[in-house]
Image 1: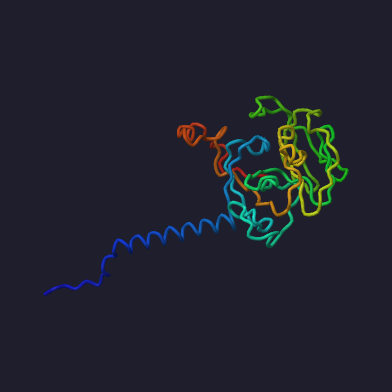
Image 2 (image 1 turned 90 degrees about the vertical axis):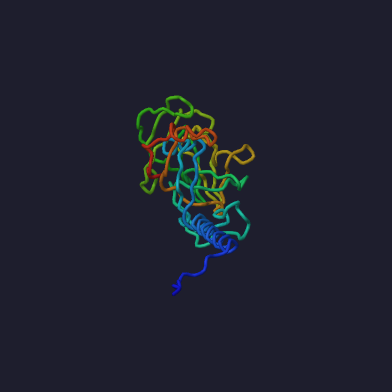
Length: 254
């Protein structure tokens, strides 16, 4: 007497390949949707946002904060213009955005000026609509990028949000500026490391940021997923371990 099995016949090699390709494709599609709609990781490559963000920080940004634009899509594909479900950012937000002069480059800075605002820096103090952003001395600190001692300030904007900034002194090149009037549909960004940041104080013609169009905004970095002191090097695997900084793990960004 022969036993009959209820098991389906084994799949052919071609069927196995098709199933595997389908599974991988669905996984990649899901990852793309999550990256476009919800979250995106970024590595901090420069010292312009010290002391809050350091070179080698690996941050996770949320994408829904300001709505979605073509800047939300990989490679900045020109699929549409403007923003979908647009929400206005607030002064003091740390923002990830596409560089206006080169949309393939991503920057992270703090939003200082909204459309219509008048922004000026005088002797290192930032003024918005004629009022200085309040700041309190917080002692000296080491700027690890420049290997120098700088003044540290706790800066509090008009909506009560406080963050730390670095200042090398009142007479650095970007410490005394003209009055910038932020155009409609644009924003004014600055780095927290005020004397070591090429930002909206510097025009694109001089390799700066200039005013940032609303459709260039990507989202807000929320927390540091991991950090490597000075950054890890892909072709030097030992730096992945030796430079890892557990003290910054899951630290919020703000």
